[in-house]
Amino acid sequence: MTNHHIRFKPPDPQIAALVMAHAGKPEAVLEVLKGVQDLYGGLSQENIQDVALSLNIPAERAYGVASFYSMLSLEPVEGKIIRVCDGPVCWLKRASEVQIALESEAGRAGYTIERSSCLGLCDRAPAALVVQEQAGPVNPGDARKLVQGERGVSIDYSHPRRGEVRVMMAQAGMVDPDSLQSALSHGVYEGLKKALSLTPEQVVAVVENSGLTGRGGAGFPVGRKWRFVAQSGRMPRYVICNADESEPLIFKDRVLIDTNPHQILEGMAISGYATGSHEAFIYIRGEYAAQAARLERAISQAEEANLLGESILDSGFSFHIHVHMGAGAYICGEETALIESLEGKRGEPRARPPYPPSYGYMGQPTLVNNVESYAAVPAILQNGAQWYRSIGNHNGGTSQPGRTPGTKLYMTLGHINQPGLFEAPFGLTLRQVIDEFGGGLLPGSQFNFALTGGAAGTIVPPSLLDVSIDYALAAMDVSLGAGAFLICDHTVSPIAFLRELLHFFTVESCGKCTPCRIGTQQSLLILNRMTLGEGKTGDVQQLRQLADLMQQASFCGLGQSVAIPVKSALTHFAKQFQSSEQAQ
Image (cartoon, rainbow, N blue to C red; front, side, top):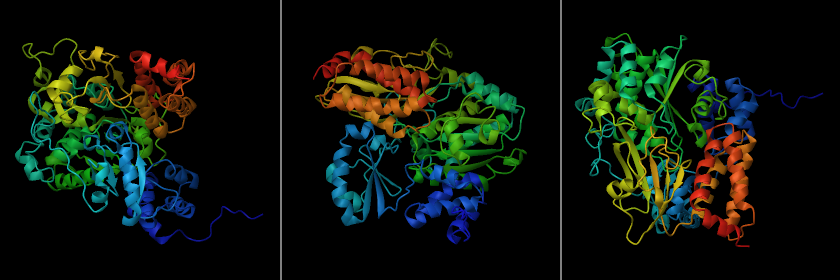
């Protein structure tokens, strides 16, 4: 009997060379597949088999990775790709019209147009990615200019808005992000020098005493996580920086990288010293090629100056940082899915426990924090825990009860006069976000609702405009999440808006568990029907039931969190949903 799976010819020499460039490591399968796609314009079955053979991994594992990420294609792609964002912010800014306009120009210019769930360019909405070049705002009339090379103008965050308190953004516009000398002249790496003068235990204690919390959405104490890793008792240990900000409304990590990348590297090195880790990874989303290149340059500069690498500043402490790019998968922002992806697997979440501090990358103790968390660390080491606790408070230098210490990066978008990013203490109200930092509503606009926290956040009505927003307050009615606020005026239907959120979650569900995979699809079908005025009796009840099911039975936070915007919308805009249900 002939075995049709046995191959007798050697792998493609170009693919073999790509594999050798990554030292033949199986965990490099994603990078190799991206390289093969760049060579051949897509990933054929034969290409994938050659990758598997060269990496000595099963072909089904290589195929599983190739079929998982949105930036990889199993079909040949003609021409260069323009990805047009259709996330909630870009939807609000007429991205669908942009895509239609671009499709009419694409053929003549040699481009293929594809949709994307989010590009991390929410402050430049409607946004596009031209091959790897970030572009926006791209209005419907700009299609021809885009294919001819115009990329729009990004917001300049060099100047603080009135009322800002800057820590992580303190040197934005002062530091040349591509110059180590510029960073050094503004005090970058002084926090690392201070850390190296202390014991690792003392560094952990400083971060713990500062009250610094994680900035990815959960608000978990950073110092406590560091202590878990430091006390794990096993070596080697690893540090991971989560720069995969793939959630709509969120772009703060991109801004931090583009304004002061050395500050992030410094924070990571301090965490490595504190936890006994000597190797680190920055997992950055595939749409951030420019930011990944900036980080690579900064790492190289720091290594040449002995601020990273072997025996930093002759201290005996060695720390190496590697940049790893994803390829389009929202789920990889979840820390265990990120680790799976980093290990060269499909980016699907792991069962927890065990948690990464005890069993993370390659089964070893692993610290995972996001970009914003690491960016806050150097100033804390330089100025002390008590200084950080005093920021934004007026109680003689102690934290106000119920308020998280320090500052947060906030993103405010939508129907306001001054969209973008700002840094301020915790405890702001939505009214303050809009009026004091967002320049107020657009002329003629009336506040209808806001999505707070991110795509997996709460849909907030006018009655909650004056609720203080903070991790420590655990106010479920107005979530802080990653610190994003999308302001929608009276022209936006909460039903149509919720449909757009469910479209995002449906596309980005990894499909691993049935409650999320099917629950998001069924919810989207109902919302599509309601948006068209074809609602049926029982639709609202079914949406609630599906939300409960996803919240209680989904494997990971993606499916569980879908219930948050659904339930908040159904609660605060019950009349609109009931009216749609009765339209038939």
